[in-house]
Image 1 (cartoon, rainbow, N blue to C red):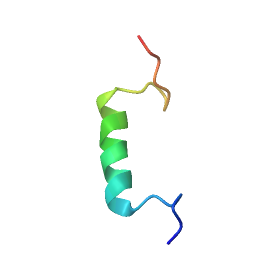
Image 2 (image 1 turned 90 degrees about the vertical axis):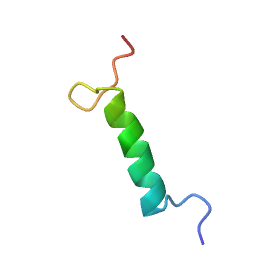
Image 3 (image 1 turned 30 degrees about the vertical axis):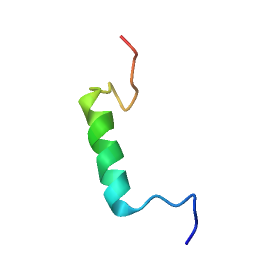
Image 4 (image 1 turned 180 degrees about the vertical axis):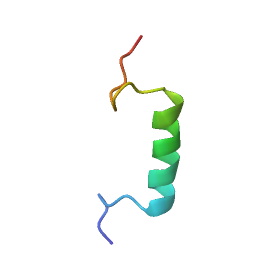
Length: 31
């Protein structure tokens, strides 16, 4: 297994965290 590969379960978790930051046009502004 590639240690750099992201498993589907991990990806879903990270995408949920990203959406929680309310990105604008796919970018987290930092405001």
